[in-house]
Amino acid sequence: MNTPTTANSVLRSEYQKSVANYWNTNQNDPVNLLLGHVDGYYHHHYGIGAVNWSVLEQPEAARDDAIIRELHRLEHAQAEHLLKKLGPIKPESRLLDAGSGRGGTSLMAHERFKCQVDGVSISEYQVGFANEQAAKRGYGDKLKYHFRNMLDTGFETGSIDAIWTNETTMYVDLFKLYGEFSRLLKDGGRYVCITGCYNDITGGRSRAVSEIDAKYICNIHPRSEYFKAMAANNLVPIEVTDLTPDTIPYWELRTRCSVATGVEDPFLRAYKEGSFHYLLIVADRIVR
Image (cartoon, rainbow, N blue to C red; front, top):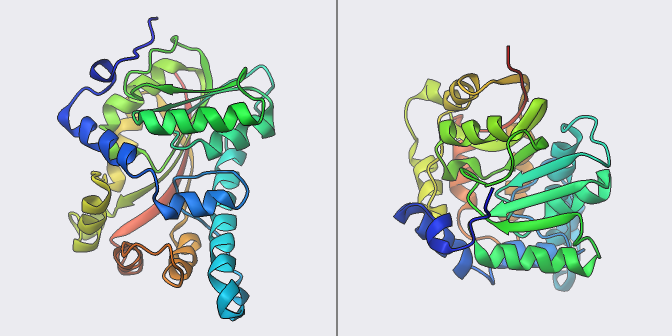
C-alpha cells in the first residue's frame, strides 16, 4: 500500500490538525524533556509503582533533580509493565506503537525483543525526534517512526504480531481504531492498551475529567466504550487491570517538583473520587 506522507492525507479533520499542532508546538515541554534527559528515553505517558519518598529529603539544591529522576523511573516502569503483556515476541516479529510520541517505549521494545518496531504519530515533530533517537542508537534498520494516522496506517493487512497504545486512544474514535487494528493484526495477534477512561457508573464526565480533556485537547472515553469497540472488531480481552492505585503516587509526587503543570490536581481528584480509571487491557485478535 502507498505510504501517506503529506499533512493533508494524514490529518483527516480539523480536530486532528489541532491535536497535531498541539504536539508540534509543545516541543520544549519540560515534563517530557527533563524526564527524558535522565537516560535518553523520552516518554509521553505517566508512571506506576511505589514511590521512593526519600527523594523529598534531599538537600534543596538536589531535591528537584531527585524527584524528576524518580518520576522518570516510574514512567519507565509503566512502559516495562506494558511490554511484558505483549506475549512471546520473537526477533522475526513485527510490532506497532500506535501514537508513539517521542518514541521511548518503542526503543525499549526493540531492545527487549530485537524485532522490527514501527511507530506512528500525527505529529511530524515527534516523528522526526524519535527517528533521531533511533538513529543515534544504530536502530534505524529495524526501528522506524512514521508520519501516519493510526486510524489508517497504510501498513499491510495481517502484517503485525502485536500492537500497543499507551495513553493515545483518547484522541480517536475507538470503533475506527480497533477496526484498523483488527485489519493489521495476524489472527491470534495481541493488543495491549493503557489508558485513562471515565467511569460510566458515576455518570458522564466529571468536572475533573473535563479539565483533563481541555488541557490535552482530547476526548476521554467511557470505560464501557473500549469493550464495545473491541467486541465489534474481533478483539477478545484476556486481562483487565485497574492501575489507578498504582498511578496515584506518581501524581502525588509530581505535585512536589518543578515540572508540575497544574493538571496534577484534576488527575488526583478524578482518581480519588472514582470518576476516572487508569486501565490496562490485554486482548487477542480471534476470528471464528
